[in-house]
Length: 361
Image (cartoon, rainbow, N blue to C red; front, side, top):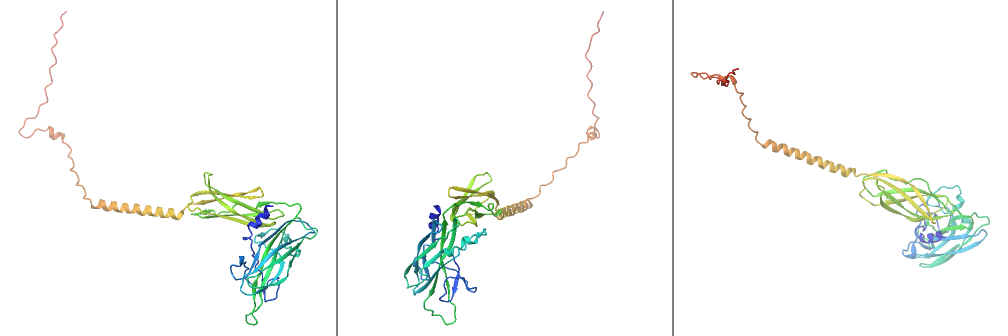
């Protein structure tokens, strides 16, 4: 199954996040005291002398038959410089995603598990192989079942003053079990792609809720597609592969690292799993660099005002042109009046009509 390859691929990403603590030496795995609060950590390969190293980080057992028993092994190493006692056990698995199912027993099959040895001592730098036995009860429902194999380290010699409380973190190995039978694999989007609505610049973050509506864990991957106002694809954001447990809802997110954005954009998501596809309803957002546009407009106004002030000063320095002489209207009567001592001008004589001889009958 693809889920088998998926779990091996995400073994490092799924490594233990069990934040359960135990106060005082000699306590086995169990509910954490109310006052104990810290986080568990895994030291891979013994590179740092700060705790236990466990491997593999994920146990997957597909195709389990009801009434049958299977065994798996886990290697436990002491990465500290002092001997350490280790107590083993099993407990429920707390998904990091939101659980949207009333069947909480799906994530607590710890009663199926037994770990041997239950207690052992690891010298500094030593390793121990632990056998995990899984007994599937009769009548187990087909599909996925989950639990956590726990390892509780504690120092052998307590060098702290009397009366102090030793706080150590439990380390867990996630167990993904699949009981054979009619299995339904299905994913569905629980909502459209959510965007920021409006942005000035990038990068831009997208997200949408993805629900596993089937009965078994599914490996899913996909990508976001970004389109501009011309419906041209301008971006593609990959969605990393991950395992989604049944009855859980995960918020899948991605980031588009493009910085310069202008105009309306549409974002849709496509999720692929086991040769099937889920197309998520698209989301929309606008992008416009308001601050940059304000700076450009402000600079343009400053330049325009500076030009107007310079032009006004330039016109103020120029001398004003003198007004032209006003023309005097001609006096027709004065032109016709003769000067003193001068005879008045006579009108030109009218020419005589031409001579026409009389006609005789």
